Image (tube, rainbow, N blue to C red):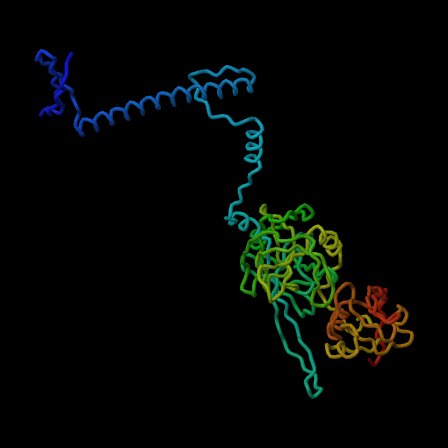
Length: 443
């Protein structure tokens, strides 16, 4: 039996034990104790082994998962065989994939470059200058007149045997002494009113083909009419017109609103297309186009609001087309009638100024102060106190405008006249047919 254990340190990182028995015999045992460096090496080795083990396990699980997913997709696809040598794209679940593909097929690319469209339609656009005479009364009661000019736009829409026909706004040509039309090549020709509709603010003017050179006829084009009934909010649009009288210019935007009811300067209302394409003074009568270059509206700056930006308006072409078709059939009056043949109505007239309207509530137009007995006006139903607002479809604001119009009509011709008549406490429209008479001698 060994007793009396003795321990001693060793230089090689361990220690020795010495044991003796009762007879004095001794046994030596050596125990190895690793130092700190050796401990760190063993710790690092264990980490490496652990990482390799986890990586192996992850690979096994990932492989099993991929196999399970592939097996499930194969079952969804009806067990179709997939060839190993054909690269396969990752597949989405059926419902998600169908929805994604449907959305992809419905994507519409809108090109912001509209130069090709503009190049195609610009030959159908014209600039219009209205040369007019402005009359008025001074503070001292003296009448005066002065020459003026205003700018607008037009669209070439048709051609007949003798005329080139252009659509514009009524307020662009109203009160004119003469109309000058400038074509894309810079040539200028005089135009004449063929017909107007004041309620829709539409006008058709005509340029005699004999006044259009062969070169100009080769440069111009006839616009293509579109459909404004199927427009949608956000559709891209292009506006072309004679902005500020500087010549044709182009703006673009989108359809901001449809069927917008607006009140115009004269108090009448209309239904319009609203767009954020800039429509400035001079753009009136120009074209609002879709991205295919088709006319979907006729621009009108008459109702543009000065206190806001990004709100322009256009007459929908589908509403305007029937009226335009009717105006195209009207007789173009290019020459004044000889003095002895001019038609005669037989009324004494007075202008309704803004002051009279504000003070007495009489609507703007030409006030009938007196109706001659047995005159064309009396026979046609015009009464004292009526206010003439339209003559043959053209809006009338002053005596001068009415007199200038009558100069193009012969005695014996029948024309439509619209008056506002005071009935039951308010003014209402009354449409009359007047057969013009001959002017009495000495008048």
